[in-house]
Image (cartoon, rainbow, N blue to C red; front, side):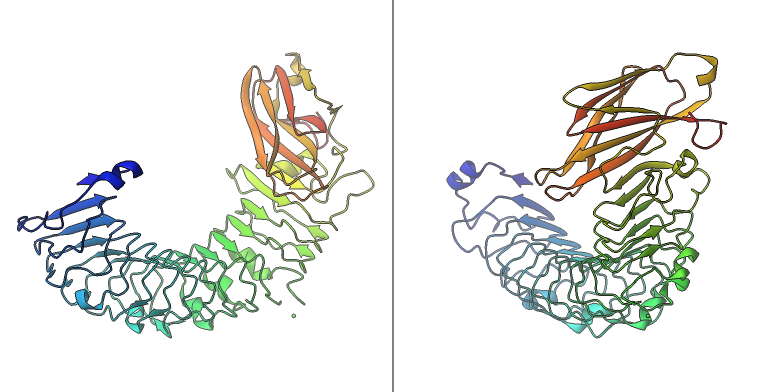
Amino acid sequence: MLNVPDEHVREELHVDVNVFEKMKKLKLLKLSGIRPCEQFTYLSNELCYLDWDDYPTKFLPSNFHPKNLVELRLCHNQIKEISSSIKFLQKLKYLDFGDSLYLYKIPDLSSLSYLEELNLEGCKNLIEVHESIGVHERLVCLEMGDCKNLRSLAKSIKLEKLKYLNLSGCLKLEKFPEIQGCMDRLWELYLTKTATKDLPSSIELLEGLQDLLVGDCRKLKRVPSNIFSRMKDLKSLAIGGTAIEHGSNLSSIPTSLIQLKCLKSLDLEHCTSLRTLTSLPSSIKKVNAHGCKSLERYWIPPSAIGLNNRELRFSECHKLVMDEMGNMPNISSQSQLQGVEWIIFRGSEIRQWFRHKSEVEGSSLYLVVDHLSSYNNVKGIAICAVSDFHGMEEYFGFDLKINGYGVKTRLRYEGYKGSHASAVTIVYEHSVGQIMMEERKVKKMGIHLIMEEQGEGEG
């Protein structure tokens, strides 16, 4: 094992091409940053493990027949094709050719009957993959993210043990394969930023799916309507930035979504035709509706028992208007903040029900709550902060200290120049004395105490 991380040392290091010729019994070889001066011609056939980051030549040695090789990792290599070596890799379980920029096709892999993991991530010039990739009996992980020139995978896949499939960033991949047989072990399916136009009806056979990400698939127009009734274990769903239609350009999400009792994350970013956001299960923890410019109404269900730290994003939702009391829909009182950590929305005013307010101009907001009997049942603190963006900041926030201890720092927000953004954050703290907020890109602040037993709006 040898790693040469320093580039200057690499340039001065000269490796003899014959360095491996007498290592007849070598079983493990792990190298990084090693570049022989010439084409080397020998590697031990006894190798069980070969990991050579930045592999320096275009081919494996012609006399390299590693019948005992279990793991082959040649990231950042210069290899163009691997067909000549495949027939000698009968025991191979792990094949990693990540970021192989010269690799343009993957040959028939059916002889690799023990293959469990295949990593081709970042093979940006990969165009062709053999159909055999879709029928491996033992394949558990298939990583092909950012294969930007890949046009097709396989007509169908039957991978009964597959748990993870990533095709995100395959910009030219237009068709997702048909599902054959039982593939209920697949937990994660990532299709973000592909050219996929629709998903086959057979995708409903992926009943064990937990993460389905098809966000930013600009050409995607259809998702089978009954998949939500079949995918009971779905926890994360991202469909923002697509061309999906529902009877009227996805004006509302399917009512069947409420059946997903395990769903925790829903990404609808830039669903510009979405008008109402209802039918959400009580398990929901994160909702991203950033850029849903037509959104007029939403309803967040009461939090499931024990579910806290909810994050709700309604930034750049221009039609979400306040009522006559200056309240956003569905957050008009403290009872609707149960389990919420962050709510982000467009606006320039502090919510009406925040008792303590301050215009901040380079100063701190400082509040002392006396330890009187009326404050013994304080459950938490709601803080509202407003920022006025003048650039492309990614963060705004504040330092919050309760009794001298810092509990909040900053909040991420993908803002636009000249826009206002408000954030409500909840801090659960049973002992409240001194509360101090130091502004950081914040123009206005408000503090509200959430009481354990008092009625709505009190505190």
